Image (cartoon, rainbow, N blue to C red):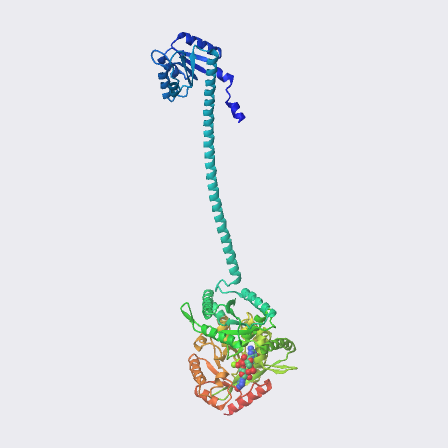
Length: 640
Ligand code: C2E
Ligand code: MG
Ligand code: MG
């Protein structure tokens, strides 16, 4: 407050430059007043009448006017009124000057805007005091106005600054909103990527089903739960699609992928009504696994397996072809012995293997006999390795007879194993294990060599009689697939020096089905060497005769399971008859396997079957008995 007052107090120097206009028609007055004021340091101008006064004012605005009231042309009131009416001059303070004896209307003077009045004759100190007061007031007013203007500018500035701040705030808020939105979408995107990664980790990208990893986690949780609380019954069903590899190889990966998707869809539809208790996973390439939670008994799992089998039975249409798949199913019911998911998978796999070797049932529930069996197989494998080293194997020869002439046309060689402790082990038992473990490769080569050595012996003995006899050797698919099979065969033939016409190779139809390309390649190499070929166990697999027609085969061997059922009036007879007709049309000759009765012989003979092999004529014989049999048979036949 004090500061402000200090600023408002006029300085002496400021007063010095104030200029004052004196308007009076009396020259003495003018002189006296102007002299006094000039002496005080004011700039003074004088006017002797109204019109001159107005002109002077217009030329330069005075800071104060001393205005005489009584003047001839225009009195002081009039001049004052003119001044107050003009924006330019209305703020100039006017002090009226009047003689004491004049009648002076003070009220009118103030109404007109005068600020003070002085009486004549002058009291000089009074004049100076009044003038100085008015000038001070005027200066203060001016300063106030200036200050007001400054304040107004300041206020304006503040308002615009505030507006600017407000604007900046708005912009800032806008940017915060935008950035928040950006961050939110970034977070969302990241979460989506995360979700996608997680999805891929737990699901098969082709079928969209949960994968093996998911299954392992799920089972771990269930097994943990089971070990802590009451055990809840649970079944794991693993499904193995059998012909997937063939479809992939023959129609291409894309077709294989479509097939897997279709299988998944059918499986999904199978469980759509109870999604919480049953889970389907894509376990491996052509394997699916199903978990059944909270089941009451095994029958429930079997029923489920049957309906899965049923839902997959109808044809799948891929690239305008109808494709059928077959499945084998292994079922495991959990118990406290299972600590790891892998244990369950191992047993399910054993059950699948068991189901595969069974001709009657496509599914199998794992039980302890399978377990023991698996152990037995393991033991057998060890024994087989030792047997190979110790040469515990030998060959038997089973005669093959012509229906027409009753003459022997050759033998089938059959592998035999005499285990030093366990005695005779059937090839039906050890050949599959040898195939699983690849031991069939060295064993098969040994058999082939042994058979060829035998051919050489018989060929030499029969030389002068020019006998056309053939010795058939069973060849496993595993051997056939070997790159060097033909090379090894060539070497054995060269080493033993046999006549190639005495050798025939027997392979199963499943080998052709699974390895069409390999079969084509090797068959043409065999044909180039004029080695004869027989299809073994025909009818036990899936192939059709028309399918076999593309291969350069000489002989078809009808599976024993058909021949043994010929006596009954059933479908087997029809199949055998049809097979014979078709085989002959295709130029194959036919051997009936496992002929045991005269009725069978009669029937087969009537239908035009060329050859027979079976206990009716002879069991598989050792080499000496086989030679005796041949000699006797040839002699009797020649006698005929
Ligand atoms: P396969 O090649 O179909 O052999 C015919 C099987 O039927 C032989 O059984 C034979 O003894 C048997 N058999 C012959 N006639 C009759 C009959 O009238 N009644 C009955 N009930 N059975 C008869 P084996 O010797 O037990 O051989 C079984 C299978 O083992 C063979 O079936 C063949 O697949 C495989 N095998 C045998 N020897 C060899 C071999 O040297 N190499 C390969 N890779 N597999 C072999
Ligand atoms: Mg055979
Ligand atoms: Mg056979």
